[in-house]
Length: 200
Length: 95
Image (cartoon, rainbow over all chains, first blue to last red; front, side, top):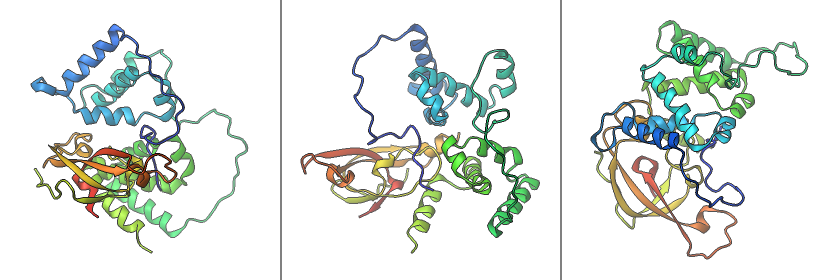
């Protein structure tokens, strides 16, 4: 499962580089100033880290990432960070934004054309039964809740979401949630995955 | 902070791994071998900062120098062309 994050574009063919500069609009200067103050650089009051903000920017779905301008991404990421920190809730933001059009999450496919449904059943592989049992037990013991798992599944980039089988998504979600909860670190996972990859 | 394991001139190999998360090591440089150009200081681990944790102890950050021809399989420029990338210590192993 080798995955390049959408924002990690170094070395990818990208055509000509646009070299023209444009002047910033007032709202762009404003959001830049506000975000930098919230990061707490230079001893100012700190609400979130630069890395939380960047992570939220880089977690935008590829389509949104490409469609938005630079500072639009900053704003969308900022509200995700404020929700993660518990400063505001999803519900509060949803109520304030009610009536406005917004993007559809990739997993939220109800009503979209999808071709024929193939109603065949398949037997589950042993690892699929195991990951199901494990995930459900972790949920019961509130080590990793059902909603954390679902949130992680639904946050997968669209191409990964489509490529993975049902229980592959569950497995990926377990890894994400363990990182989020601090049960394991990114470094530990990177080192273990490199070791497993190098086994013959 | 974690003490620096490398000094300028040391040969290092970038960890070839693709974990999910807030990774600051560019995709294209993972698995490549280069040389420490300088120590840039030590900073809280961004992978942890992104998850609202402290990122401490600070991780040494290095500027690592690679030959372009070692990075891109079809590189057609000069054999002495370089690319320099700043990489945290935990993504580097001795080469």
